[in-house]
Length: 222
Image 1 (cartoon, rainbow, N blue to C red):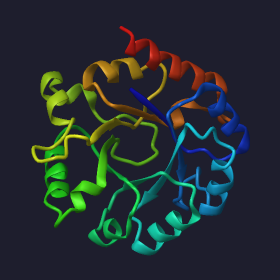
Image 2 (cartoon, rainbow, N blue to C red):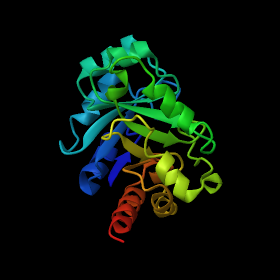
Image 3 (cartoon, helix red, strand yellow):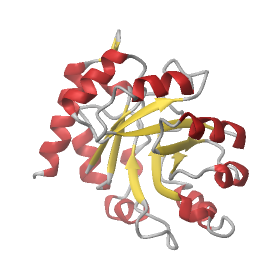
Image 4 (tube, one colour):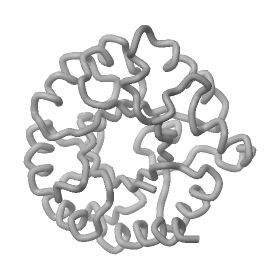
């Protein structure tokens, strides 16, 4: 299982990641977010990151121009796109894309997968992961796990009927060290994605990062 720590904004937070070794680091390129960094700032931060940790540019309803700007900055390995994912933006992307689906419960998830799989030509192949997130991006809240039929959710959330077999499932939204084990047991994700769940008053908290990663690794071994 892979771990993504999202919303990195400061060099000190890079130090925490280099110590505790998640698999992915996320940089939010979305100005309304309190975790916003510019592509240039993200590039500077990413240059300090352990090269084994992959860099994810988190975008919200980006146009083709922003996609190109982020890719030209050279810091990102992956684009994670929330809200509106247009054909224009997807055509502009040369990096792998993680498509985020904002959920209150599982209602609508299969429809979202269907819309992705019905994109023209080879565009669906650009989407290498689906991110199941809470209704409001960056809210620190989970979607309604208790509404999910566990056996069905493991089937449904993994991928759509026509999805490429290599497409990964990422569980996001409101995760923390106290609930991530339950989320793993319910959904069996390939990736877990955390942001506010490893934060304190001054941004990312090294103890919370350590505890989250240790909890996930422990759950892997059960």
